[in-house]
Picture 1 (cartoon, rainbow, N blue to C red):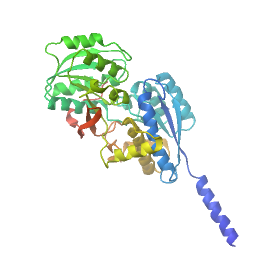
Picture 2 (cartoon, one colour; picture 1 turned 45 degrees about the vertical axis):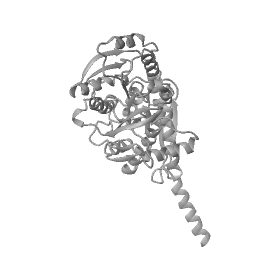
Picture 3 (cartoon, helix red, strand yellow; picture 1 turned 45 degrees about the horizontal axis):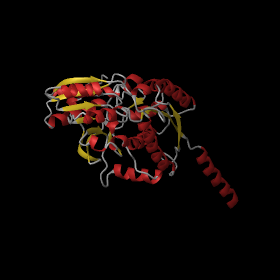
Picture 4 (tube, rainbow, N blue to C red; picture 1 turned 135 degrees about the vertical axis):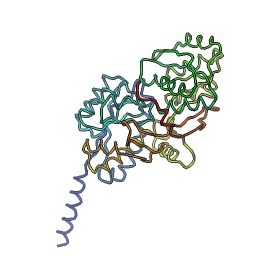
Length: 382
């Protein structure tokens, strides 16, 4: 009789294991190319969270997670191909690249398949609107970031500003949101410079700024690698010491390797590690796993994507795409490692705190954190 009971218990145990439903996350991200600087660390952060959950049987102890990565090469067409393959393989959630341009086409594929999708760190507020009701942002949106940076600029007493942006990428047009808020707060934009992605010669723009009389109080740009390093080095080499406000795209090892050239540069980002907070604890876990320090906040944003997915699966109680989408859209005040995350009442671009950081002696120094004045946030446009 004891043998029969043991066999019944063993069969029940095996049956429970067999019915564990694997959650497939497909990442059609940029492991190479111009957006790899953001997507690679974001994927590493995702892996930290996935490993933690899988050590305990997966989400809610019954949904082990499998991450499948296909390189979209920072190219829109290749990203669509990668997304199609992952969706065909049964992905329950799709991860999209760190920029709206390669993410939109793949996001449309996700919406057609009724599969929830997240960008790693793309911050365009128009991305979720363009790609469909199944696509969610993860980073504080451009119009939210620039509301914070424009408020900071006016608090610093800056009356005039010069904008540097590129028409080649929606992200690099972030200064246009800054203009809206800066002028709303009584500031004046006195000049604009336009560049092409990958441009390494900024001499014409630098000469123009140098010749302005009076010179603007501040320069605002969303340029990122390799453009920002080229611009700031040429600007400072020309003797122009105008304060510069950037965005999260410059929060990279390359920027911090520039030394005195970037001293005093201010930028917006998603969080700041302090002793004992969730972000510093995540960084410790990251270092333990990879044997090196995290170089960018993008690792933590990747980790938070898995936090969001976990909360949605628990709320929905299923891996059905429509149910997961509804659960994500209803999340409010979810504690992430970089602060609270809210999708409820938004257009799937999350409401998050914006952090402002200054570079001092090669280190990040916290300037401010908080949710900007909602009445000043411009409507999604770029």
